[in-house]
Image (cartoon, rainbow, N blue to C red; front, side, top):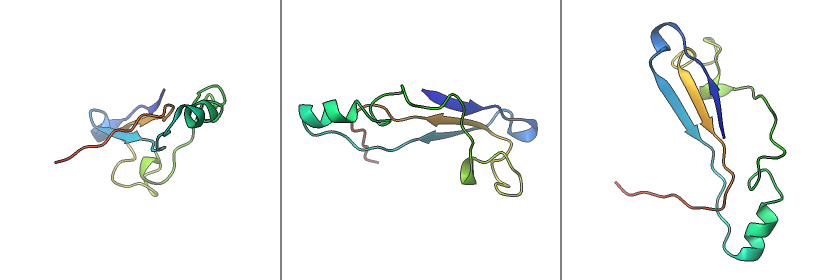
Length: 85
């Protein structure tokens, strides 16, 4: 699920992507237990969200990115994604 806000002005064509962390499950039992929490299911997620800090749409709080498009990518599985430059 993606929770998004729409940018405006100079930030209308710029994007700030935030991928929520969560970890992963190591075995079937952990994955089943995780499926009953917000890290394993979207059933308890709120319909709307408020952004703060670096994701805030308030120019006083977040002068660099307040008017950018924001996509907050929620975590809801036990997968692990890692990279290497």
